[in-house]
Amino acid sequence: MVFDQHGTAIAKAQQLLSLTRLSRHRVEQQADLTDCTVERSPQLEATAKGIAWLAAGRPSDWVVPGTIARFEPRPDTGRCERFMVFQEVLHAML
Image (tube, rainbow, N blue to C red; front, side, top):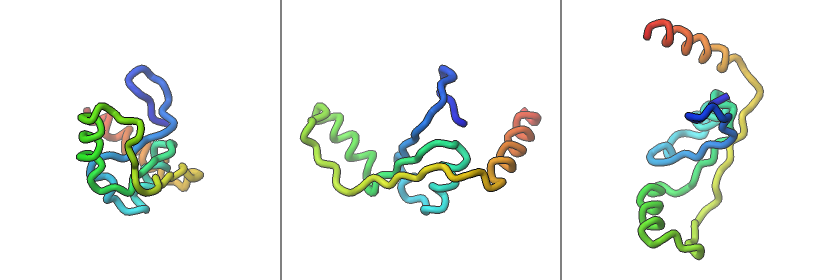
């Protein structure tokens, strides 16, 4: 489970910037490790288009082409356990 700065559990994440170029396998891993739904836009220039949308005053008629891909967390396959061990080792080193 991933938490924000206030300790609230995060249920959904959106991939931004160059993360849209990650392979499907990597996005599925991200969903599994964070136990969050991950949404990925098909747009490769999502950052530039987002800035343009903000600069235009957030128009409600802005068209977003493409379908957003959603990746749901899968049942634990052992990857989460390995990640927890990694985090424990990392925290012990700090």
